[in-house]
Length: 208
Image (cartoon, rainbow, N blue to C red; front, side, top):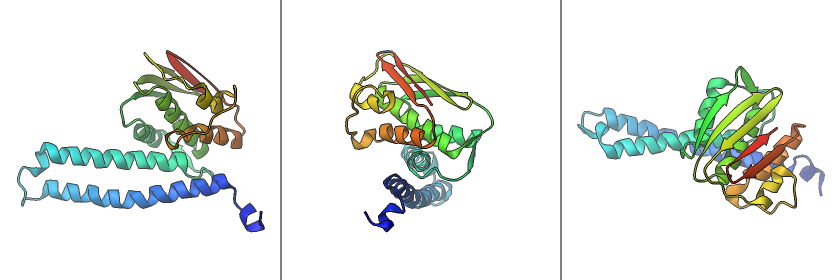
């Protein structure tokens, strides 16, 4: 491997790719959102702003923008000393849980390191994968880390996938929709955090 290849780890390159994709998608979505707002206010189209079709488009654009911002935080680089406020964290969590499958309660205060927020968002994505029929989630900040507890009526248990977090057995290669599992394990290791997780038919818990 050349010195040029050694200069940047593959995980960092993947983070840069994720950040670039999200950054490039935010601008056109913002333009679409602005166009929708102008149409809603335009006197040339009376009643258009109150139409269910326009409301559907506006909601879809807002949801996509929110989710991309969350993806940018979760899949981008977490280097640096940037701090995230509780208000911004709440909006990022809403971006991750926009599908409505997870009802998340945050029990935390103050501000948070970007790397910490990244791990929290990845953990919520893991829970969403394991509980696709919905769950009630409490994300509790227990200094210096987090304890995230989910309760559900039914879970989809994939022990080989959760092995990335539990350390039990040999983790299988993830599908694209499951990349949050190895990313969370990698992020916890990079931050020097001990990662624990378990899942059963009625819920799951992730601690880091």
